Image 1 (cartoon, rainbow, N blue to C red):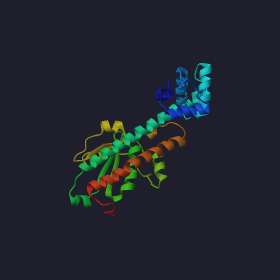
Image 2 (cartoon, rainbow, N blue to C red; image 1 turned 45 degrees about the horizontal axis):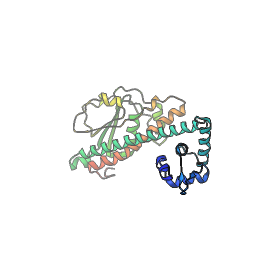
Image 3 (tube, rainbow, N blue to C red; image 1 turned 180 degrees about the vertical axis):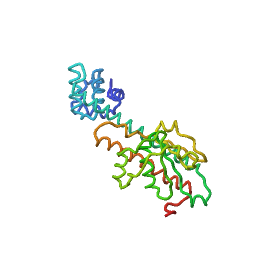
Image 4 (spheres, helix red, strand yellow; image 1 turned 60 degrees about the vertical axis):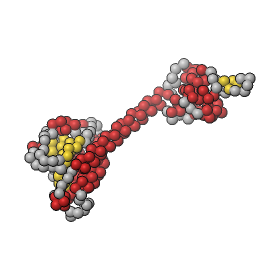
Length: 276
């Protein structure tokens, strides 16, 4: 086959074929009487292996060396195993990151749609705070962190509460990660959703899948949002590993809250800082 066909079947440019030949990674092709280079199936197989190794982040020379070892041994060289494992782990991390970004974009789209549905009279918009209730199962970690951060971010524009469908005591790590950013949450208590039944809210936000399924219906015209957050309390390990899990939750909640605060304010047509 000619160089153009070899390049096409290896999914690279013809100039790359010449580059690998110049480095000695790909043996120089035999030439026909008319001067054209002729490549066989062996060259294609080697070039495909070299290209695959390059995609793992291996240099051209090392890729050529490993390809030679694979050809000589008739099997994948052991030096490739950790590289392949590392690459697969990197791919999985990228997939997880993309899934998280997709989830956050979906949450943002729902928040925008909810904000668009929120309507109040001008008098209400200028006098009444935006009422938000965060709901999870235990009201010990995720919903407590969300309540604390929204009170900090939203100031007097928001009236914020949190509750649990099966409340238990506030997790000590919740208090610790909030204290790290200057929020004293030592006096917080877990609350049951039953304490808030009958009260109107502008937004009811569930922060775990189980709470979403069992959350009661609250009266009035309000927007329901769901932020699926991992439970940091389920992380096993050392004290520092558990603390780090709660820090990640704090960061993720803060990331979701910042656009929510601005969109909710705009929906109410309340300029930031209108209420002292």
